[in-house]
Length: 297
Ligand code: GUN
Image 1: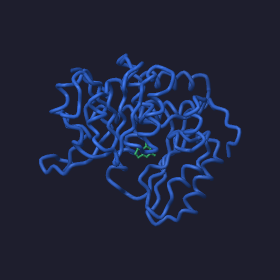
Image 2: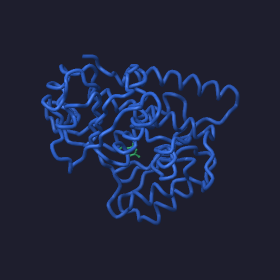
Image 3: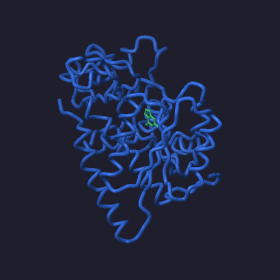
Image 4: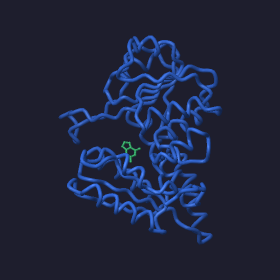
């Protein structure tokens, strides 16, 4: 069994990004600038947005963190997004999810200018991605693809089971793994909460991508020998022995499953750091105005 080390891979890519930013700076070019909107003070969201902002600084990007009270109205939030759409200083915008239930996330994603949509959640980007057109690809699936590429994982003709069908991970991930490319060219099965007899699918999988948000869900009895397992879950579990009061647990029962795998991602240090890399790569693309959108705001 080998670890798909997202932390080390992310560090290597970060060095390349930092070099590229310093080259841009020395030529007097536009420094990539990411804006992040955080609503409320959910502990996990604070951590994720904090890491995104910190990594921007590490590699020389500008960043702006905008915080709003959970009572912010939908119309006020959409107004703030439109202001950022119009601000030429800011290249990329993310609104950290989850957001309060009185605001429709679909309205948020549809309001973000596709040219600044570095999360790739606007339907223009997800649609373009599906049609293999230049687009911002959602950061977590993009990071996973980079990790498979870094470890030269053979994917062509393999059976890939994606567990989870969210717009953020499961759906874009399954499209990327089915695309005519490498990594890609898989036969993909999407499993979800209504799948009957999940093991029937996972036991024939060469690659399993678990993105359902249920800690320890994938057991060894559901995994074939030699499978590649990618664990997208990062649930906080109360742990009084830790200074933070919690530990992170993936969707995979790592202790049991790891010995059966050819490759597996750890949690933490697997998919998480690669997600941040995907976002930064998208922000760099946005700052270079890499994609032309016919109906951009
Ligand atoms: N919440 C969980 N994952 C993500 C992500 O990739 N982007 C944003 N904006 N929110 C998230």
